[in-house]
Image (cartoon, rainbow, N blue to C red; front, side, top):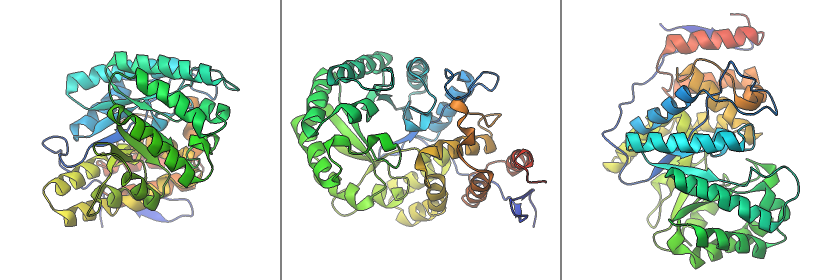
Length: 384
């Protein structure tokens, strides 16, 4: 056997084989719409410590978006993967959306961007304050030239007293939108502060509220991103959507089957995992376009164990693994995150991620990945 070696925690030697050489497609997929929720690259020379303002390496952050567009994927900007609520503050978010939308125009790439209420201070807010904050960010995203994703708001989750409060706020937002938006349903496994979103802990009741909202505003709703990690519940919701309204899967555990779909419906994609597996995702979607489900399944199959490990509990720390993989793959020169979030996963977890990424053919330069993994593990106390 050839290939560089890494000594893993516990002493086992891992020999890396490197990337599978996934080709860049001729263009975006035609049978599905697919967005990758992109991470941000921190400035390693800045004070990106917990609670400090986010300082980004703009060159590398935007280069990663160009990488995603080069594989035919759209970019979902300023979403959970970009550390909204976990280090990315509103001034940095506003600038990120502005710069990324300009890059999208230059590249001819598809882009959506998150709208939230995170310019409000932590703590209680009235429904009127929540609505104004949403509208402010909706205006910023629209002015930048991106399609808006109305993200779940921690402030709204705390202020709302039932489904009627959610409907009141979203009615006003959708009335103000000058183009169709993407709604967002992020489960508490991604953010515990969103427990009971849409006004009910009972997910069937919450789904009824979502369907009521969409049916009342179907001309203003491009689709809804659903991130509950529950494939059956996602299929049930997408079958209830009005014609023309998309279900964008945010299920990082079951995405191959949900995107493939069944005899009556399929999901499109807006996924954090696609940032880490973009070359494989592009190859799989191209196979689906040409009616080759066997290749689609074969390409996606080794990415699923990677995704399941990446998004393992506590799920909200998946961003640490996303950035670690971007570093190993050569998309950035360091493993530093805004808010100091590189500490969110253990060396044991990240070493397993290295192994799974290599098995999926997602480390294009085995020597580079091995040298970086060895450096990280040495500092973590695993002699190489």
